[in-house]
Image (cartoon, rainbow, N blue to C red; front, side, top):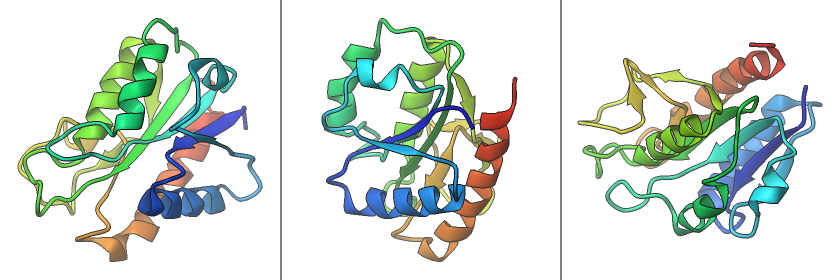
Length: 171
């Protein structure tokens, strides 16, 4: 597998738990971990495959650390890079903007030439709207540990299987 990094905030307990499950599912494939609170655009660019942890905060916002990093990425070209996004949300308490962070980041990365991989079905979720939805799929993996924690492990396992294929594909 080509050089792969997973970027997340080391301070986020729930996200760290999900990251560890994702890394475990990749098995022997090396995944480097980068802290979203301190990483720079220069540190990200050597990677061909990127897995971005983008939880949704408040009423459909990106976490502060992503807001602070994006200006450093605005003028960069992500053509030739494959980007997979996952993020937490709460479909019961925030049904009108469930996992919007995934959609915000997906749009940002596509506008800079990245190829998005790891789309997942919206089936089995209950929400009103989401910027992360394209057609009948999320533009990444939506995780709701507050309301559907029993489904998290199987969703991660299935998602990582799709990423292994996408990251190895020449397309």
